[in-house]
Length: 362
Image (tube, rainbow, N blue to C red; front, side):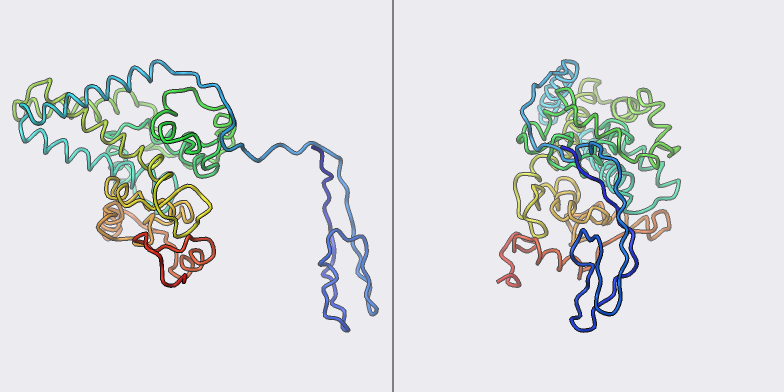
């Protein structure tokens, strides 16, 4: 479809003394005059040209092309994780289980406080020591490099639940959970990904280091050290150390995936009933505060990712608050309670933070 591009230059329009009616309210205007004064309006018509399509389909029919390398890799990881779960009850040392539980928490915060709230959304700023710490914690989680993670996540927010969203929840639970990683990217994802502003990420020396040395560094942080430490420090078997770490790693993966799938399907929507992202307390508990997803998609710049902020389901916020207290984190952004309530009354579904009907909406 072709459109005529028209721009207008005009002086501030007068208000007719006898009517109080703003003469510039009917657009487009060629010339307007009132009984006391004339207003001059200049219309500049530019050449007709095709305006590029900006809307993206929600879930248009597509042919899925499997990425067999990913299919085999994810298949092995999950089989190894199931065996690791068996070993936890059969023969593994308790120190190994505790060690991997701690690693799970460290890795999860590397995603939530690092890749997500710091780098993807810039909800706060971090000094170099904290950036390095979060990059190392993120490497234990191994969900691609931070640079790639941020690119996908910014696409997800800009084109949420459309074909330009890497894990489009409109295609169902499995696709948004893990299926999107098992098939080739949708053409819209590739196309729109090239238009994202990523200069802040590409120019970050800490993230450039992780990207440059991704294979040896992430391999060591995610698989190497978590296997070697139990073997050499408390004589765990190689098999137990490896497979229980695989259980830890796959749990980290699926917990993060739940934000893309579960929190886009089940839950209440106190802030915007018209979008898929929802509040899901189970996801919040598992991800240390990332399940207040309806709030997060409405106010993505809030470092708390939740109206509740510092609460028992939001360990990530407490982590950031701690480093803010010692000066390693600063410029923490948050939304005012007044703005939150205004938005909830305007577009929310009438539920409160617990998913119950809010009396304020009755």
